[in-house]
Image 1: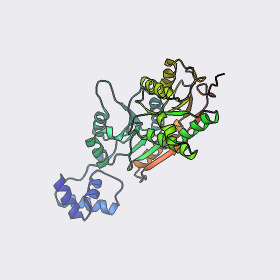
Image 2 (image 1 turned 90 degrees about the vertical axis):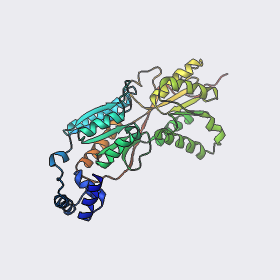
Image 3 (image 1 turned 120 degrees about the horizontal axis):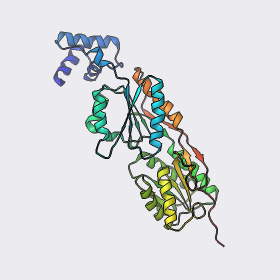
Image 4 (image 1 turned 45 degrees about the vertical axis):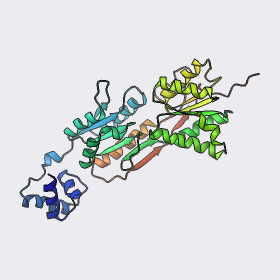
Length: 337
């Protein structure tokens, strides 16, 4: 097919990329150019692309890393609702314990001539190299929500991680905390990197030396147990408050503080990120930065629909401000005596 594609492109006087777009039914080709490529197919005795094959399915893949973190189902539900209102059918795809991965789902979605894909909180690289190339080659409409890695060529919707950290730090330092720790995800996780950069900038702007705050930075996998273990280390190094990169890590930090015999918030304050389900009902109720799930879902589905209608969408990240919800897990540092 590669040799035939070269011949078609040469005969039509277009690039191979343009010829491939015509064969894939892409709307991003001028009508006159499309007609030249189709005539080239006729002259070379090759079949024209089937109109039926070019029409994309109304199925939309909604890909999430897992369903254990409650913020992922929240986004999936919000996006599914908006897709349904547009006459589109969401297909939930999540990694399973028996080995079904994102790459497996992408293969199945491509076989159905999928109409588009929304990646939520996952790494686009996890889709697999071959699958990622196929998505790009077939120009599948796609949008990433809170992407876990860098994707300069993709359209993205994301919560403003940096602003969330600034809100939490302003809240905690305003109550008198001077030794504030940061607990985020593993290295290479882009939202965590953004939070760390904001944490560093906050202290630099206040001329706090790096050796004061750097020992109070912790990384952990996104689980309560990992959060508990990492938080214990930060508290032992003198942190009186911890800003966490997710509610799950924050609940782990509360658990870690209690293991050390500390009370939250009397001895240690904790903030989270997401404001996922039931964070107002845990003990203590969690102070956290709320992601604007509804508005982010609106934006993600709107830009996906634009792509499906053939409109060009510029790659880049659209950031949405979070809202600090103050509850019972934060308070003034305890003064003995």
